[in-house]
Length: 208
Image 1: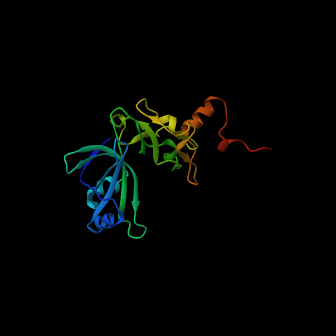
Image 2 (image 1 turned 120 degrees about the vertical axis):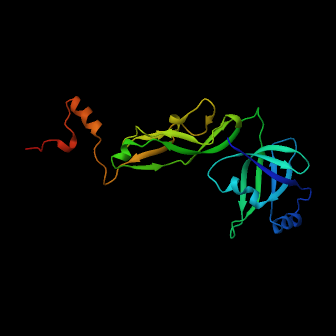
Image 3 (image 1 turned 90 degrees about the vertical axis):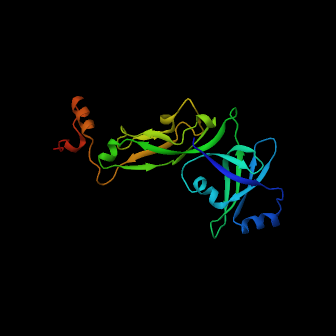
């Protein structure tokens, strides 16, 4: 996974008054859980631009003004209901010997046969929840849809890896190719039917 560095200042005052003062100064109050102690810090809102406003998932190095560096991952974020400004961010500290749980973006690879024949690719999942060590997790999970015909589905088991555990039931569908008004028969299917002595439905003789 890609990593970002955020330069921040550790904060001692965590009350409402101090938090409001930080926000008025363009700072975002944050907290890191998961370590021996809870760490409160703040950083300019612009520092989180490449972390928050992207579909990608990153690990983060929080570089505090006292020289401490903490490896973490974003856990939760709160936005203002009207202005959409960032109000608060929670991070979880990560360690080399402890797995983490994250939702990774999914990306298709290839051009589906079903789509080429007029079908429509529909997604059930855009992000896949996995558990693994940060050093082993990819930036994105890819799934090859080249052989998907109309009616076929891509399951989470089709993108499984020995580097992480997928936290969805095995029968969870990532995407599928659905038929449409412009869909046409798959030539290969017709060839297979002919080889088996079957008459394609579109060419079946009319009953007397």
